[in-house]
Length: 434
Image (cartoon, rainbow, N blue to C red):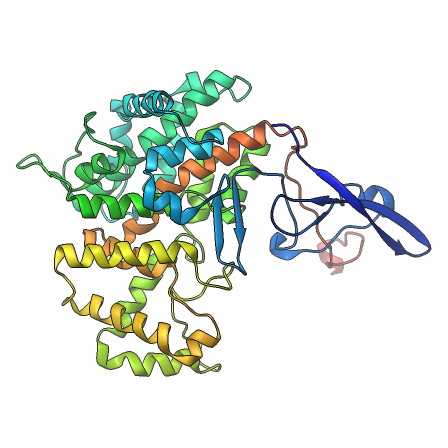
């Protein structure tokens, strides 16, 4: 990857009689960046930035977020345009290659993905090693990490051809692996992929078909899930993406890096947010109890928080939520399930959040986790599968970020520093003298 960093000035830092200068770089969008790579060399000091929320760990051309304005761009394209007009495979090509594909490029890419959807037959043995009640994400971490034991011809990260094969394999096999995790958790036989189906329809069939009868994917339902996949594909340098990059910076193989990303995504503060939103709706239980929980949410002294509302990054409306809201209501109408108590609670909470002055003032709008959780529940997925579906979609972003990292001439192995505040240097004392 050719660096596009453009210097726009310098910043000076003075301390203890020393002055150091650092370049200022301009981004295509977003704030300026102070290049402090030589900070320790020039000053003997580090910066302190817990969570790295004020630190750019890399240069990237993939995704841009403006949380204040509610903007999310994939390779420069607004997320709502892609979700409404494209499909998963086309957007995957875009994230990986930087441009939307021409017709022949799309056909070739789609064919390659389709031809890699099967998994090694012996991989099925891994599933039987898990307890029946194992969380599907635990299965995903183990099985994806094990792929490197089966596909030795695509683990050499120095070989561009092997990297490409690994990329296509990961994107193609993730739905198969995820569907197998679901089938295993409910005690049903695995369903193999079909090459004549599109990516999302194929996944739905692998999840819901049984040997006794096949499954035809309702277009409204498949379109909604396809949108969920597109909306979750990438989200800049979040915790799981940073984990993939950090693991990749050590030279780890791509399957290990993606397994590390899945483990990070599993956390309830990250990928588990839509599962947490559904659990909250179940805790509320009925429309009649909503006022009680609204009051608790407004009470600063009450630890209860409404899950699925507001966003750490988006201080405006989550741009993904706008698309997801429409798809969510289309699914509910197509299935005729609005009378289900849990969904009635969700719809009433949505109405209050969009009208209540407290929520509007604090910009606590329903986010993508709120709508995707309701939609996935309506589609028939249990809550413990929600994060698995998130991982399936995010695999494209992780692979794109991993590939970009390997081609970055400025890339180094990740090595954050610290402020040590422990005991000062001291001498060992024998046990009888303590």
